Image 1 (cartoon, rainbow, N blue to C red):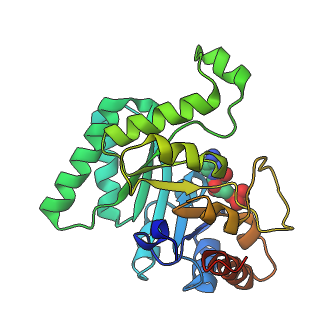
Image 2 (cartoon, rainbow, N blue to C red; image 1 turned 60 degrees about the vertical axis):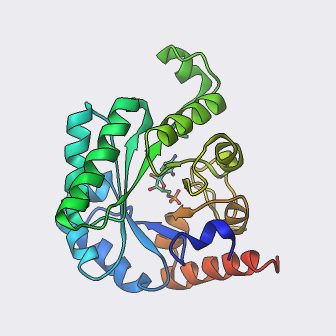
Length: 250
Ligand code: C5P
């Protein structure tokens, strides 16, 4: 295992439960138990099934990444973050574009309530620039930096505000790690595709092994696992590929 890998959970694969019913999500949890490190509940599943789906997964001893990308005034985001901590999620995320006061407030309030109530403090990640953004969309918003510069700028804002890490493309891991001060800064990366897998709508991909070698802390993988004929076999194959790469054999 690489140094970066050690301080994280032993299995860095976070499977995106991008389905629209609790029944489908729970069936995937059942199939994938022990083969992945965490389950991602995003806007689709959360809106369809509500917070109960998170409780049902954590009640089984499984970890949840709540991917709701909070973005609001500092007080509202902090209150939402506290409820995420009470739900028992291991990770939740916020938009870094909410600004440093929002980032500092959510980090501080969630830590304070977790300490007071004896909760395990969730890790908080900042979303820098959505991968769907283009140079044209940036110009439209009046942002004059390049996409890459803005990613680094927002990662530094998160770092300075006490946010645990960011969500970023695998191609951005190295410059982010060079730009932040926290040696344990988490970089969770989507856009991961096993060699030979369909790209779907992901444009700038890396294989799981490449992303781990590049320093990813967690890999978010959806369709290559959940749409596979045998999701468990697909997850096990990915883990095997990561372990081989991490032991220096590929
Ligand atoms: O199926 P796939 O592996 O592409 O799923 C990736 C997951 O990561 C989806 O839930 C998607 O919403 C999420 N994600 C992403 N790109 C981002 C942020 C999140 O693909 N920049």
